[in-house]
Length: 486
Image (cartoon, rainbow, N blue to C red; front, side, top):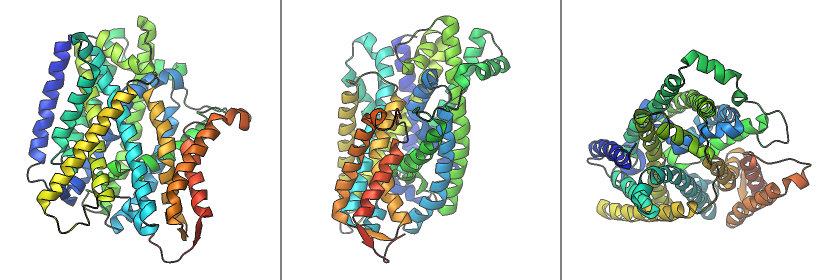
């Protein structure tokens, strides 16, 4: 595939995306941007959230990750399923009952000003780092296969990608994203299915035989039984559960889409449907990863990083059509995580820090100008973050992402758990310090865990430990109080 062809595919896909944007963003206002005027169709939200949850990280890192971790990630996914049930049955009813636009407003009602700002700040930090990593993964592929051939600097590639995100999210916000995510999810899943077919044809092995080959290969090993291993199956399961509660249920981006549904019943139907389908989709991605390993062994494909396995085989070995399918799938996976992050961050900054919802005396035009300024500021932060990540050492992006989640979503998990499951009042001004000290303690415990805990190594359960430390810190600086919001 030539760089020109790849660029043409990208531009055609983007043109279709902007057509969808134009249709959905007409007559949009601030309420359209923040909560889609509370008119989103639940099954459309559920389908679109698949793409937003998976993103470019799943599209590339999960198949490549099978080389190092086999199917052990599937235990995390099963834990995710239980986490989504907690979100649907505990968190969504709370958010709808309190009529929240930003979910962190709950912390203000439950604890006070400083707890509220702490929760929102940790979300902003978490989502900025996570979304930047996802964007870097996709932009780096475009750089390698397109822009390097034309000697275009990496920063220009980053700038073009972010400008496109700005343009199609600036006006419609969540109202637009609900529909663009649906469009993008379709192409991402189609790309995975077609790639499986292409591999089957190129190896001249039928799909039933490929299923048998994957089942019999070491890559299909799902359960790690060594308790000290970072991927011990019980750690994986409970980590998956709490990762979902934190990264979805306590995440403005994901909850903003649920809060755009017409009522709580539709939001819950969306969550249960979406979570069940997501289990199957992740299994397909892992199956694809095992096939890529089988193909690499058969063809002698060698890559420097596990993240490079999928793009290298799709673009260089399976032929032009497979390359086109991969690129369309990658682009489809990239946009949902980037656009949703930019919209949710704009929402959080506008509402949680600028108090846009509370300023009743300003006009809609001024609200729009403020929101636009925030949107562009978030885009600048993304640009800087992606450039910083480009300087870091090579490592599977999904591993980095969950490590970051363990440190930044842990305080949110502790705050919400304390608020929901205790009747105590915290010392509000102490909350920011607790939220900072907890991740620092986690880092130290993780860094020296082998020496301290007889060879034990922390994995994704670091998130749970972080939340527990935050919870205990809040408990230490709290007192009984019956007049609370629950």
